[in-house]
Length: 152
Length: 152
Length: 152
Image (cartoon, rainbow over all chains, first blue to last red; front, side, top):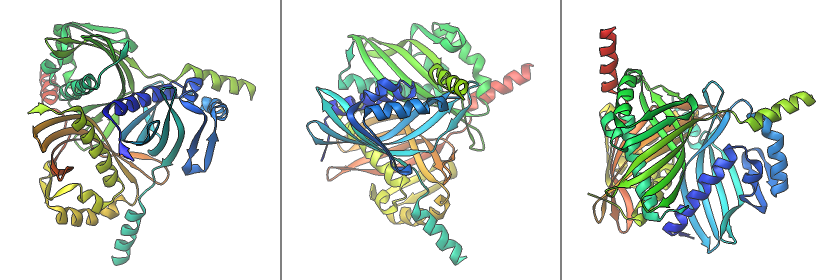
């Protein structure tokens, strides 16, 4: 795997800018169209896998009422973009998710780490798979805290 | 409209990095200088339009005391950058706004979606207009929640 | 100083994506390896300077237990990247820091402004120095509030 060209880097960043806006606008059909027909979203942290656009759309429609109380926004950072082959790109990044209610109050969902595989189909990028990991307190820190506790 | 060159992409990202720092440092004159002389800021969500640098500076000076209790920071994401012509660039993005008080506590303003028109004047980018939309809960989600409520 | 090439811009952004992940994964050895052997971290806001990898590693190990209750994430924005010479790059940026606990609740550390000097060693970027400034309410806004108070 190798770092992508600057052109591909910006193509990928723009893909996410547009895809995240569709997601946050709750444009379910538009968001589903940014995945391949057989695209997979794997919510690894809750062992739930959504396979194909039809299932993605059905699940998102069922979840729609949950967003009535707040506008959702995803804030991504730390993109690492790697070329697997000419038409396959691995992208990983972190995501902070906000909800802004009618009064303007902002609340937060947990933070996440995401691993995507993008493919170029007829010259356009699409997501072939998305694997979502919820951030958890570090086992290393937990062990260090327990060791200190034991030593105290 | 077409996507910009990689050089322009980075020129635009750097314009925002510098402009947002001037804004967050409350450097009012410096911030105003990143707009054209007749530059417009349209707070679409509250029907308030600021026209020209003089009005921008007067309004910002009047608002200054509101920032005594916390350092403000804008966190932007999902830039879409499009070339209208050689010297005109449309840029849109999302913005999360924090305030950090003396004790280090962080609070949040509502989230926003912003649409700018940048122009190149003597080789330097300036903002000709900025339209700010406050994020609101999605009508689609509200309708879905109401429909479910009705069906229950 | 001059703006960097597009290739260097993306090289620098990728350096931070990887470095911030090592930091947030509490991979202390990995994070220390992104600094030069004599690399300095200056917590300017609390007058504390960490000099060299060994001291960095010792300090980070001592701080580990503090992270047992939440996964930390740094969210950076407004990178300004300037070339000092062929192998020296000045980078500055803002940072928002979250902690996500076991239940998924997110809390915030103060926001920061950071100034780094990166050097290219055997073709790879490393941090030679990092100076961290905690955001404080603006003296300009405090003076404006006091003046208004006095006038009232």
